[in-house]
Length: 334
Image (cartoon, rainbow, N blue to C red; front, side, top):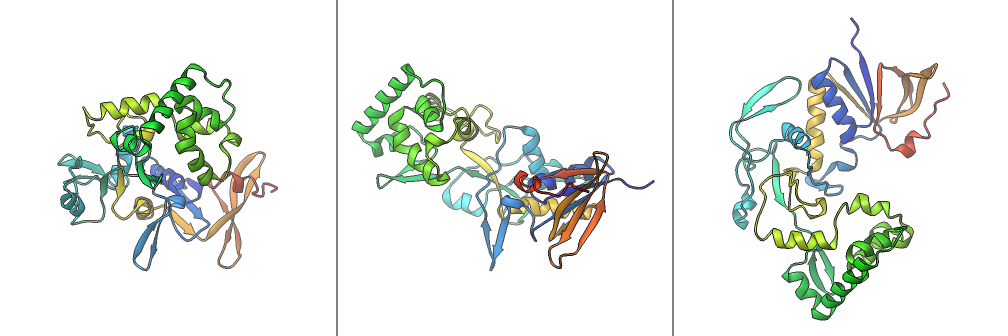
């Protein structure tokens, strides 16, 4: 019986996850076509003259236990403190001993959680530390209403922020048409203009008044002035050791996982497992067209970017993880 084939466009996290799951749970053979010469997409880690450079931080955090377990299946969480943990006196949550880990397709191993000083194949637990340099002082990011923040702002500005928030709470902007409206409704105009306005416009190059309010729901989630205050108070009385931090607003998470050699290491390891278990990954191969018969896709046109040769590759299942803007211009006229 002929083995079924799944054609996957793109060797980023999405494409590699599809291929891994097919190998792990089915008899379907995944074949990935990746236009570039590397794996990981925008979550890759570039090795330049022995220096590993992350293209974006890409912290590993999720409120889904299933996703966390999937990551730790590939790179298990550290079971011993790392060198910098010891030097800085940081106590990080460690993995339970004698865990059972699945590596590749139905290959179960009983493993002792790894020591990051003895192996590179490990996920580190890291505390979140981000800063904004404003008023010639460093502020926590996301903004935390702690002593350091209030001291940096000063009494006058702090009072203005408080009064502005009360005003916005009593007089919400309705309907919320822009990101500016979104921020003012949740933080007050003074705090919005102090922290959010310039930062957002510098990052995205667009005025907050020109960005739809839906953007705030996606990027800031449910964060608000009220939740920031509650979090600042509650974290002084309790500290969760769970990586999921399910009761913490996503914008306020305090810890996350990070592969020892950068986020790209995760996807390099997934790619290795895929190829070792019968899957294929073809780099420098760009999908330029979709072949179909009677509205049913039956193949793709693939160009070898090294020499311009184009070939038709047939398959039974098809997955695309390429950017939608690129997928829209593919040739469907076959």
